Image 1 (cartoon, one colour):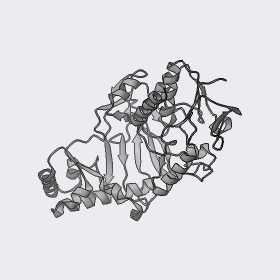
Image 2 (spheres, helix red, strand yellow):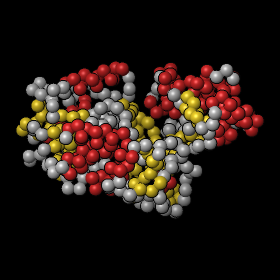
Image 3 (cartoon, helix red, strand yellow):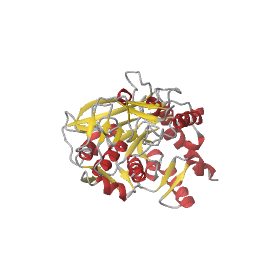
Image 4 (cartoon, one colour):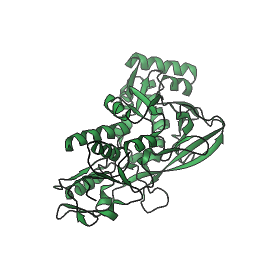
Amino acid sequence: MNYDVIIVGAGFAGSVMAQKFHEDGKKVLVIESRKHIGGNMYDYIDENGVNRHQYGPHIFHTNSKRVVDYLSNFTDWYPYVHRVLGKVNGHIVPIPFNLKSIEDSFEAEKAERLKKVLVDSYGMDKKVPILELRKNKDPNVVELANYIYEYVFKYYTMKQWGLTVEQIDPNVTNRVPVNVSYDDRYFADAYQIMPKEGYTKIFEKMLDGVEVWLNTKANDVLHVDVEDKKIYFQNEEFKGILIYTGAVDELLDYHLGELPYRSLRFDIETHDGQYQQATTINYPTPHSQNAFTRITEYKLMMENYPKDKTTIAIEYPLAYDRKAYEGNIPYYPIFTEENQAKYERYCSLLDDIDNLYLLGRLAEYKYYNMDAIIDKALDLYEKIR
């Protein structure tokens, strides 16, 4: 088992590295704890003929031609523009909040007045953070900013992160944008596309010819000795390249304590016909009204979808607990100075292990969109190479 490169994790971070090194003729092993490849992007056709995303909806959008060109080696695409509605103070309105949202939220005279003062103050086709709206001298604009904070942002964030309103970082609040336009797209990226055969097929093609061990925990076959600064694979020193995309605290047996995350639960339901007006409807309502944050209707992301049946996912944020039955998948790092300091202490234990590279959302304790981690993986490959 004389591997040149061992990679832990078969999501985008690990699979890009595996594909590139395998293409170079290196002997590559991918170790994956789950029973499937693809990480959180794993999808499949369910009993309703719907392409279900096992770990929540993944919408591909990017401004990077480099990333699109790379992935196009493994998939064809179809155009898909993601649109989101929200249940806001009893109204169903477009999210992010825009001029159409104002029309749907207020009586006609007030809506026209708010739209006019926004356009007069900022111009059309602008994105204006709430902080700027709150600084406006017109009390109508300040009222609008407070309305959006209360009914669009506050309760959604409280549910998403398990925070009280006092704990929500004001800097996050102030970045919430209002679109001074009728553009109801959720993303504004140059490329808004979806893979024709789904995400799993991309990974199958990327990992074609690569040795993959599924249902294998990295710590069962790998050991990092932070004292000797050596890596051991199946009890023998490994001198090749190790790309680690898993959680750093897990790699080091939680030596400094666990790093906290938020997790998710998805309740899956089957319904007849079409369930809702858009792919995703957000519920920025108080927890007492709706404990979930959003409902996604998966088939509305498909190029050609079945008409008779549909599959929806109701999304509930949870506290992460690796030993629990639910909430045992880490989704979102919880960014605090204390958590970042603990992560950096973990990284310091790995200093001077020259053949170990940390890559990805868990390994770097940092949230990445799909395109960003693919770009980062390509950069790291070039650096190592």
